[in-house]
Amino acid sequence: MLSAACQENVTPEKVREQVALGHAVIPANPAHSCLAPGVIGRDFRTKINANIGFSTERSSQHEELGKMNTAISAGADCVMDLSVGPNVASQRKAMLAACSVPFGTVPIYEAFWRAGGSIEKLDAEILMTVIKEQAGQGVDFMTLHAGLLLKHIEPAMKRVMGIVSRGGAILAEWMVTHRQENPLYARWDELMDVCFEHDITVSLGDGLRPGCMADASDEAQFAELAVLGKLVKRCRDRGVQVMVEGPGHVPFNEIQMNMEKEKELCDNAPFYVLGPVVTDIAPGYDHITACIGATAAAYYGASLLCYVTPAEHLCLPTEDDVKKGVVASRIAAHAADAARNLPGARERDLEMSRARANFDWKRQFELSIDGETAKARYEAGRCSGSDESDYCSMCGKEFCAIRASKRIAEKK
Image (cartoon, rainbow, N blue to C red):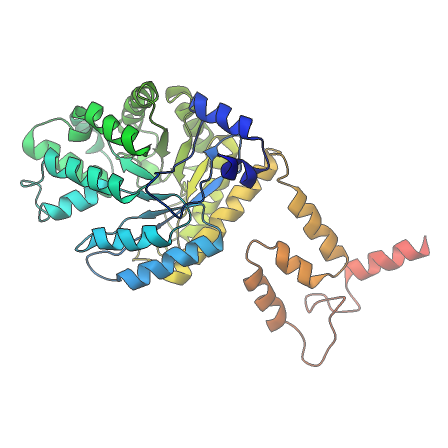
């Protein structure tokens, strides 16, 4: 608890108060031995999650460990392993042994793989076994798509893109095939026992999140959200920490409404959003479209931002994509925290302004969200053979406004 408080420059009492109310969570499985816990909630700094993990088509354990380390070095507050395919348990074990931040998973992925990728062979027992095993390994939080019910599938099929959540699609196809209710919902009390025993934070998955602007804020999305609100209460009643996942692709003008609706239906449970992406036509730049939406989301109610990389909608991200995604999300989070006057949020900006006024390049790089890139840009843009200690190549020595301001101050 003290570790979480120290990161935020708030009192332990404040952290305890918000966690007790269910307005904040500290994902921390006791079996995750190298974890330095952090607190997620509206009264604290907006946090960033980075998704990594190999697919059935490419990457490896070595590559994903590299991505995890890059994400944490770039400032990610949480990491989720979305690996699908063979050897995911050994992959997760290696990651947990090296991961100092809260670590999350989506158990339905591994369960589906264990069923041979067959909807017909997948059953609730396989899923429950996977959840118990992952909990025992030390997973701190799990995405459970328990709010997607059989009755929600028909309205979801009226969409332009249908169901875009990988976990949501697996469960929806299972329900339609077996004509049974979502096994996560049907066996919720059993799940609560596992989560309580291992202090797993439940991340209620948005299996019906919109995958394009045309599908945003529709009947299916909000029907699922209403169920998630009821599951929030059941988690709290059982003493299990819980947060709620949200959209997705949302037009900018609908973000505030989406954040406020979650707060109302889910009683201020921490909101964990993917972006939101605010336009569908920028593949290759979706870390930017998500950054735009994430700033608004964090300002109006989100507590945790799931990063989006330049590879979104195109391919599995590289290590460089991971870094760009984390940095973009950190910019969005900080912009929102500064805009809502979170205590201490603007101090770093003021320090940066003073460093710029004094041409203190070293300090500027130290204060930058990505100082390594800032320094490299500066060095690459310097004029050959010149001394640019008190100006840069943008304006040059004669046209530098800051130099002129200093002269004006001296003449007054």
